[in-house]
Length: 181
Image (cartoon, rainbow, N blue to C red):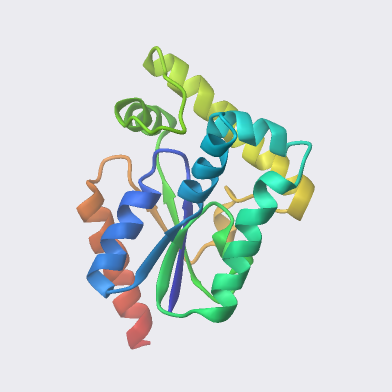
């Protein structure tokens, strides 16, 4: 079984994916981590890399090719990435939603080396809004899809008022039900 997790910035994709991988004894891959590393290697933030990606396909293509290859060669893993569902179509497709304010609060409180420093919650909220728009622009241009359209997913969890453990529990319950059917 391959599980793909997409969702809004700050929804907990990476955290929840790792929890589920640990519980199921699956490998975990993160496209966000891969692209973050790509940004840092170029001396920029992820948002700066995304801006380049609005005009140049390479910023997404390397990560996207990696996902496709994983989906063709490996089984029993979980991957979090906004387009993982698209590149691994035979996966269980999960989407984590979060209110923009809570997503911004989480990102503001989690320092990542590939993120710029946010001066306030409003600054983080504005930056995340720009990130979502950049994602929509890039993915529509390069692949003709909107990763934020809920119709692409098998199961959606609003994480706004849930702990990562509660989100993982809901997903595990869903997967066990799906395996039983």
